[in-house]
Image 1 (cartoon, rainbow, N blue to C red):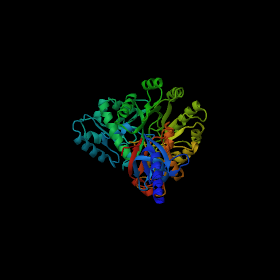
Image 2 (image 1 turned 90 degrees about the horizontal axis):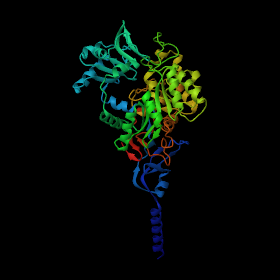
Image 3 (image 1 turned 45 degrees about the vertical axis):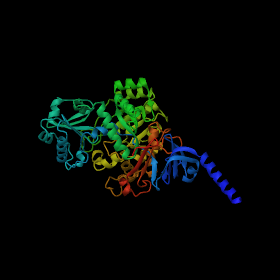
Image 4 (image 1 turned 30 degrees about the vertical axis):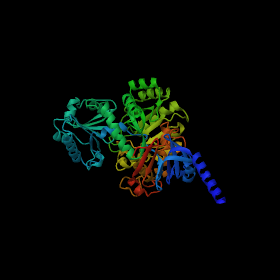
Length: 543
């Protein structure tokens, strides 16, 4: 009798415990979870309900407290907050997937071969469009000229964007359509000449002459491109991406795709600078939905180092007749930053050269004056004079950098800058010290989409072949904890999304990624082999 009573009491206690457990959608257990919270704590389980993290802790404790519809035992796999790319070109990636891919071409002849293959697959194309060539990867590092394009494609216009997006290689057919001659001039751009004639290379603002002629994708095409880009991004663990410079129509398209459920990835949109866009959004004001943030403008101060359009304080070491140029006048840049300061919008300015960085840091400083919460950003902050570093801290300016730029440029950066000035380039650790914060993006499709590549470049300062053995300018390598924060919580802060996501914490949106190895402990030589096992956005598995 006593034994029966004891069994009844045990059953009653078990039933009571089960009946009082809280309902949840998902319980993740047996994982090594890097929360990226303020204590950089780890856990082995969390609970998700209605697209948000409900609780984080130990598997045994959470299993006692919650009854989940689905339980996922991850077998000890590492879990991280969903990865951010705070500076990329999401729509640009989708557009590139429709073009001839020239990334990694080791010679001009290989570029021609790829274009011929592309034309065979697209026989009805009225233009041949491609992207990704980089003469710095070729034996002859001078700019290519139009002759080989003319020989291969005499009757169809060709326009090929350099890997950095700041130079265009075109054939004679395209030059004629654009009415470009040796006398063509454009502020903030260059028509490159040889023996007094255009060679077929247009730098920065001069590219617009041709781009106005190229057939543009319609809304349906752009929707398809965005969805194609999303597939690539989520397969690599990205849950929030950025669009560094898009139009109001494109922003509205992304919003509509979110609302209809056709696009799941979150997007931080920087509005392209321009008077109509300023008028439209300064009246409308910033806005934020569950998946879209619009509260910044993308400004361009200068061009790129690889095409010598970056604006330097002293001439290029390998081309002393030029120091690059600004894409907008100092007066115009000051006018625009004043407009943004009078609004609630963030200013995000592309600055590559030390002159561009110096100018914009001072323009920001005149308005911001001291520490603040405006979260204005310098995009790239690629070559910064050491005597300008302190301005990031004084004015709370966020350096938004791309670690893979360092390991892509390291082969020739010193040729451009010289041995002294190059020490102020790709100075991630020095920049991070100013605000105890930095953000890591990729600038894709300029660089590879994979965020782990940037993590590797930041901590090891090596390329995909783990070169150089001792790392490149290792005094500016970043520790792994900081590198992870730069692509999660700090990136969310830079996007005004830190209350929504960026860490695994109760109340935040359940964006997380599961990898096949722990990037916090794996040998650096193995980091780029890391594969994504699962990607979740808002508690929904999207990959």
